[in-house]
Length: 401
Image 1 (cartoon, rainbow, N blue to C red):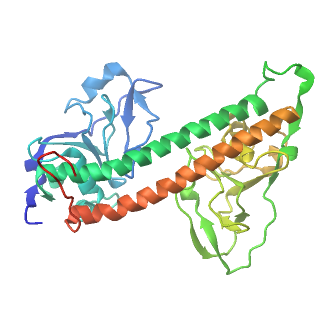
Image 2: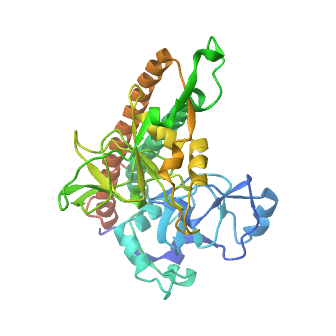
């Protein structure tokens, strides 16, 4: 690391953009609002909130974020970081934007620096606050950072970015594949008969009891090691959970590969938490929260159909109406779900849909496995590259790595 130098952050940053004023009125569309909750694991998730275009410049009076600027959450949680990818975004409170001096620092490298355990320690060790831990702008500016020469910064960032770009591509592919499957389910099971059907009478009502079994009985011995899935690791925008691990079974819902998990409690149901189980070994039984509903598709329908049911807006709204209990702990009443009726496609269409759902669910699973492999590789390389333990060989003459 002889060529690496220590700098104070404010000496290599061209602009800090910080906003701490009153949030303007939200709109249905307009300028995407980057909030602390959507900056996660090096990425800005799809924004769900917007502000009016006419409010944008007056709100961002301290500076307008640009593409490749760094956004950093300063509290709740502290230290989530990502690069701006859109030409116009608005910042919510508890977020600061960093823009490096072009002759000193490569923004993508600095993003990875603060994403690494080295950068995370420097941020969190300087946090303050008794109730909510956060870092002040004045403290952030004085953080020491270790930087290699600019060409090496760019080379390191290129290695890590190539992995992240592939991960992002696979995430986008899975989102598209799930959207395709959800559209097919909605067209053939929920909406009115498709115009391509020869006769409106060629379909009949499909009761929920004919389609799925809810909370099927499975057995796990108390104290046995078994794969466990936490509610917090069930996602709202993907059939694939983020993480699962093995612990001793105590009590909870039990499931197998091919089952669907759906949250039954406030606010997890409203947030759309659900998952399609494809991560267990053959014949393995997993378990999770007592606040899960388990759906198991009945023949002749493909197992993925139960996940598509849980993802369907009409079914989710129907389930929410059945919730009872105190305002903070309302739960779905299973018995009321049986009143949700669907459309039964013609038999030949069921065969065709099953074939499509098999292809889509398998591809989603393979993509997710590849995402995990690439993420592990990136997370292994990141601290080694940021500490100088692993160096990137470069040919300065032709710019190759």
